[in-house]
Image 1 (tube, rainbow over the protein chains, first blue to last red):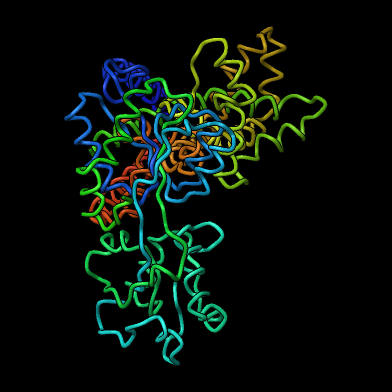
Image 2 (image 1 turned 180 degrees about the horizontal axis):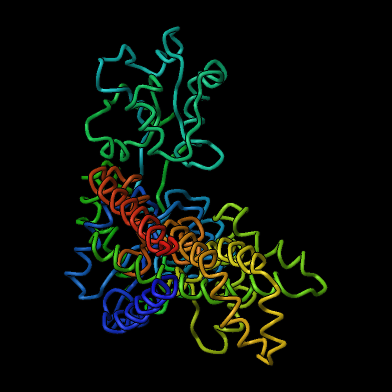
Length: 263
Length: 220
């Protein structure tokens, strides 16, 4: 019995090998035609999906995305991952790569800006209509990204500090590991309010509403930098992607997904 | 989209499981049957991927295999090729993470084989090699198969190390767990649920069927 199972496993594996070689598109080591790889912050997924489609139509060059947390993407580039373009949700990660000489500095641009919003559950209607309302007695939990690891959390702390709320809210803050978790806490009512980027609210599908927008003066500008990676193998195609995100069409797509134009 | 991801996952995991089955059994045999200096240390090192968070293992892997890594750099200088962000990287990540389960199971199974059979085989003039394949392996078969199944299930669900070393590139290195992560984070709830259901279904089916198939035959 055991031998039969092992036999089947071996046959399965041989089959897998064969199908790998028979399927160039999914797993080929070198696919034909030009291709670029863009490492982009996860929050850019939808906007970049659309910009990527436009890029492919315009240039005939295939674009693949590697989406993840900006810090992870930075680390991958540091260890030599074959990335052509890096789009970060924070300037820190780009600064580190620039200091190490791993990006082409002359291609670095800020391609988008973001703003902070205070969100509350869409139902039942919340009595929170302003940042100052967070100090009310019925508010027990306010979710923000962990300022140590989540850029949106960093800016949330900055905003709360400048609004003189940071110290008073200390005992109420719930630190989440990513923006999605902040949204989840608010959607499920586990937190009465949360602070996220304006571009993040689409992911909550109308289950939350915006109670207030943080004044632009309450935190430093939230810039999204983009640059061509030094070791790119197709510099011109990479540069064309950067240019497209900065173009009028690229900016319009970003605005559609809740970002502010960087121009 | 879902099917591409699923197919890629299955291919990656099948290759990883094949490598694990062979290498893990060999290492399990080494730890069970041989005494040498540093054996406990080797055992500890081989167990590490099981106890470390996968992201830490993945971090070690990119430091080691990245284009500027300890092993990756000489390889890149020599061949102009690096493993990072290829489907092979996903195989490596899954293999490293799931290997300890195989080694542990194989070692326990091989240790439980009554040594008298093996001694008898050797007395009858059979080589060490033949003794292993004709005596030890069949007697340890069920334990080894259990190890293979466990490793398969673990490799199928592998996320952290894969994300680090192979990246998250749809159609190229994005396996089921990565696709689920991406769908959840970007609010594609329906997609996330389907992917999660499929992943769960396959894992349960494989473990269940193997349990059924490997049950000892009823005595007549």
